[in-house]
Image (cartoon, rainbow, N blue to C red; front, side):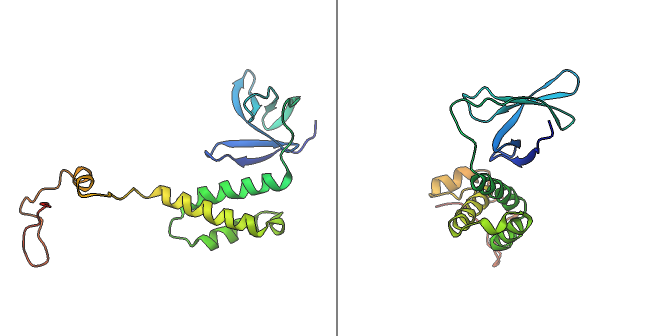
Length: 166
């Protein structure tokens, strides 16, 4: 069973194994250092067993769905990596992150302009999720920073006490 297994990250950051354009997620550890991986489609009963990263059993009879398209897998792989990098490297420019990830990928030239737009939108949305939401009204502001009181040690640049009366 010399089949090529490749890896990618899911949207949630979990490791996935790709075999014949089907995605498998980790299910459980079996006896003898064997890992069982199940198909990511909820109703599909297909699974594979790996021992030290080598395929030992393949019960990949997928019912109810076809294999993912090669372009779709590539797009998902790049997009998920971009989302992870956006949260790690907040100060890097989005265009630089996208360019680096596409250059790392062997099928980079097959990325379309529509894919690039989706990458840019996904990257900016992932960056925005890392920042806390700003309060929309004064009561929200006071509940968020409720412990703030003028205790004499908080002064303005002119030497006046700061008050939270609104």
